[in-house]
Structure formats: C-alpha cells, structure tokens
Length: 174
Image 1 (cartoon, one colour):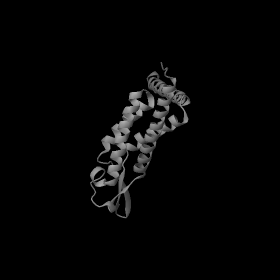
Image 2 (spheres, one colour):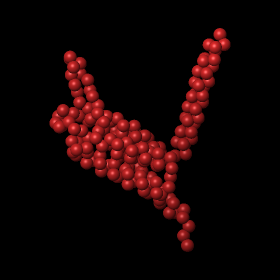
Image 3 (cartoon, rainbow, N blue to C red):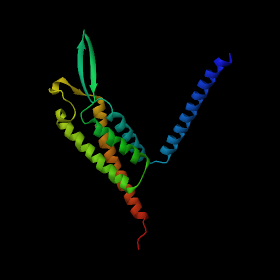
C-alpha cells in the first residue's frame, strides 16, 4: 500500500508545484501590466499577436476527398524571417528599454513591414509555390499578422518618440 501512495504523492507535489509557478507567473505579468501605460499595454498585446500569428499557416487551400472537404493551411516560404524578427522584437522591446533597443526594433519592424508588403504584392515569390492565385486563399492568421505588424510598428514608433521627448525634457542642459 505504501508503494501505491508514493506515486500519488509525487504526482500531487508536481501538480502543486505547477500551480505555484502559474500563480507566480500570473502575478508577475499582472505587476508588469500595472506599471505600463495604455499604449504600452496595447503595444505588448500587438507584439504577442505578431509572434503567435507568425508561426501559423497563412496560405490555405481546399481539398475534397470522398465528399469530405478539408482546409489545408501552409507555412509561407519566408516564414523564418517573420518568426525570428517577431521574437526578437517581442523579447527586447517587451521587457527591456533602452535607446538602442528601440532603434533595433524600428529597423527590424520596418524590414518586416517591407517584406510583408513585398510578399503580399507577389505571393508566388515570398509566400507560396501554388501557381494559380485562385487555387489558394490567405487565412485569418495572415490578416491578423499584418494588422498586428503595422499597429505594433506604429505604436512602437509613437512610444519611442514619447520616451525620447520625455527624456529630452528630463536631461539637464548647461
């Protein structure tokens, strides 16, 4: 009977440990958000959306097997650029503030916006190898990524200018 209780005790301890870690994580995120302004909160949310949708399939097409229609979603050709760029921007600008981080963010985000625009204008080059545009469509992830990309770029730029203006006012002059 004691041998049966040992795995149950271990399982109970592991579950309690995960619950404790989850509560600590929630409290840290809550404190993090409490210290941010509304534009910074929105910026963080848009960066999370950007990262989450960068890994999803953007191109979709339908296949019919025996009267069953299935939708297949594919990752895009330039997926690695969007995933890495989004991750770098999320971790650096989401949690760390300095003037060079904003500079790096604006460069990377501008490159991502340019690549996204270029790929949207010529999907055969950047996004898919499906030759006929009528054979595929873009999924909702594509549109959410595009919106979050542009909105996080615009919010990041405005937050950067606001911080730069505030720091300039706080900097003593001789």
